[in-house]
Amino acid sequence: MDIAGQVALVTGGASGLGAATARLLASQGAKVAVVDFDAARGAAVAEEIGGAAFACDVGDEASVAAAVEGAAERLGSAPRVAVSCAGIGLAARIVGREGKLSVDVFERTIRVNLLGTYLVMSHAARAMQALEPLETGERGVIVNTSSAAWQDGQVGQAAYSASKGGIAAMCLPAAREFAKTGIRVMAIAPGLFHTPMMEGLPEETVAGITANIPFPNRLGQAEEYALLVSQIVANAYLNGTTIRLDAATRLPPR
Image (tube, rainbow, N blue to C red):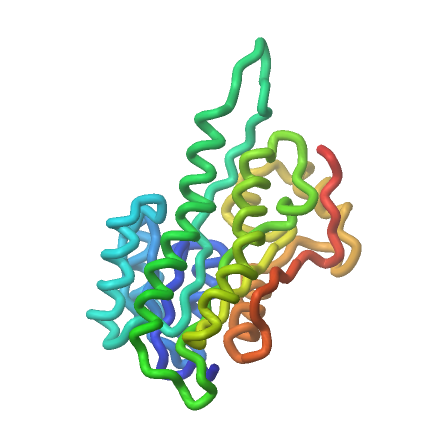
């Protein structure tokens, strides 16, 4: 699909992977809906790229529905491209000190990461199905964000890994379901990227993490994630699978 002139919706678009994706798609001619829980930062990114901002809690269906409908109203069409980058990375052992459980962390992580992605995909796909197909037969492309932790999650990442594993697992059945209406579904599983979550770590911690990355021996850049999104949009034969974007990283147990 040629992104130029199309509407793209990006959740988590106020920072990190989402902001880089919004900027790149806009530079390629897309009209971008920047969707984020942080209304002020989302509005700043939208103003920078000439898009539209929508405050949204992806774990709340009414909020997601309003963002998808609002994007269509303000940008002139339902989105042809929907990218889910919104997520949280809470860490907690299943059974912590003195037997403390982390059920609350699990529930919140699943709601934001997995249910949030499902809600965005659901409402975006329904809107795409009402569009006329392009010359290629495509009506839309959905790109969801999994994680390398889907396959090699570390201690304390049970909730996060479960949420990201669910995103990877639903990619193929979703692609099969939407195939008849010309909507593709892909997932990207980033490894260790330079994002706001990483910026809060001490320098020595980041150095230790980077030491485990084979090549390139550095953290990934958000622009590299955005580039893969644009390549997925452009390549009509990419469908129904999860791509690891990780410089050959395999996360150690801790």
